[in-house]
Length: 131
Image 1: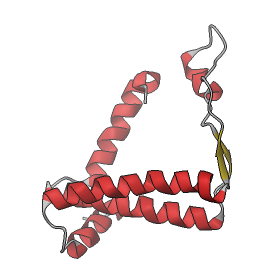
Image 2: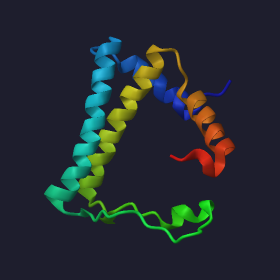
Image 3: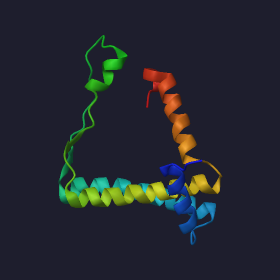
């Protein structure tokens, strides 16, 4: 059976997860890496300034079809990540993926299977997926 990228990634994580093998360590490192993603985005706004956040109440026209709603929802982000901020954010997201894969590995879960099940769930719920 041919391995997919998710399986290969999980195997690499399993091989390199040595110091923080305890599930408690992995959970706390996952939470820490997630916080670092938040921090990287905040620093892109407050430190670098390549991004700006202009947030206000989401507004959509009355009587709009639910499927068209996403066309009227704003991300509240303006600008574009500079090369440095992009690199930092990619690194932090990568670390988060590392610890997510570790959580899956320690619990004998397949990231590929989880992604497929989630995709099917989202597709089945369609516009009622409210995520």
